[in-house]
Each structure stands twice: as structure tokens, then as C-alpha cells.
Amino acid sequence: MNINATLLVEVVIFITFVMITMRYIWPPLTKIIEERKTLIEQGIKNSEEAKETLEDAKQNAEHIIHVAKERAYQIISEARKEASDIVIHGKEQIAIARRKSEIELEAETTHKINLARKTLHKEVTKMTFSLCEKVLMESKLNDKLQSNILDTYANQDIT
Image (cartoon, rainbow, N blue to C red; front, top):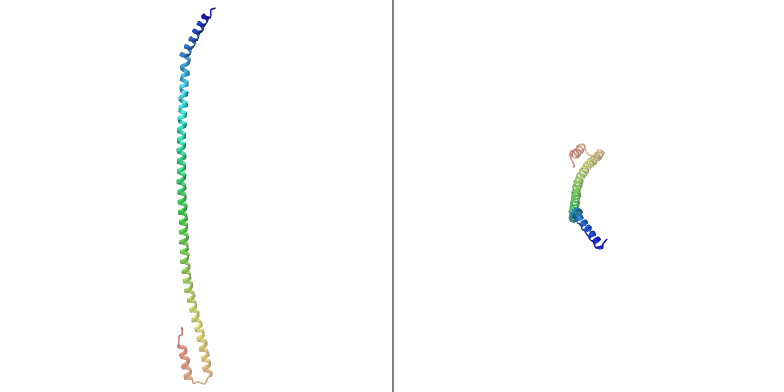
């Protein structure tokens, strides 16, 4: 066999193999590669969109947390103010109640002191009247003068 004939047959077989490959095998492989390339590009695009969405979500979360902290601070401030107002109002009510109780107690005390004075005055008057009566009875005054003095003291209302 001749080297040129073998080479020529090998070239024809190689060209036939390449033609069959290009005609039947290469198009499906190219299609699969293009689909894979498109899938990879879509995955990269989705990944970038996901990163952007994640970044937006982080910013939204930080904003929401910031707003929530401000609102919580406002609520706490309002609660403290209300508590302070309640305490002040309570103190005022207690002061009013205490003053009212003091006035009532003072009035009651004054009333009882006046009653005690009147009772004491009546007792002292009775004792004085009794003492005067005994002194007058033992003394040698006339009956008319004696009864006149006793009537005068009996008719007096000393308050």
C-alpha cells in the first residue's frame, strides 16, 4: 500500500467523520451549550437582583428598626410624662385631702374645746353658786338680801 493512498483514505474518513459530527452531533451540543450559557447568565442576573433585593431589604429593616426605636422612645417619654402627671395630681389630691382633714379636725377640736369650756364653766358656776350659797347661809345676812343675791347668780347665763 501506498502512503499517499492511505493518507488520502484517512483524510476522506476524517472529513466524513467531521461532516457527520458537524451535521448530527455538533448542533445538539451547541444547543445544549447555548441553553447552559443562557441558564448561567439568568442565574447570574437573578443573583445580582437577589443581592439588590437583599440590600434593599437590609436598608428597609434598618429604617423600620430606627422608626420603631424612635416610636418606642416617644411611647416611653409619654408614659413617663403621664406617670409624672399622675404622681403630681395624686400629690395635689393628697394635699387637698390632708388640708380638708386638718380643717375638719381643727373644727372638731375647736367644737370639743368649746363644749369642754362650757361644761367646765357650768361646773365652776355650779360650784361657785353652791359655795356662795353655803357662805350666805352661814353668814348672818338677812333673808331678803340672801335670796336677792342667789336669784341674781342663778339667772345669769355665763358662756
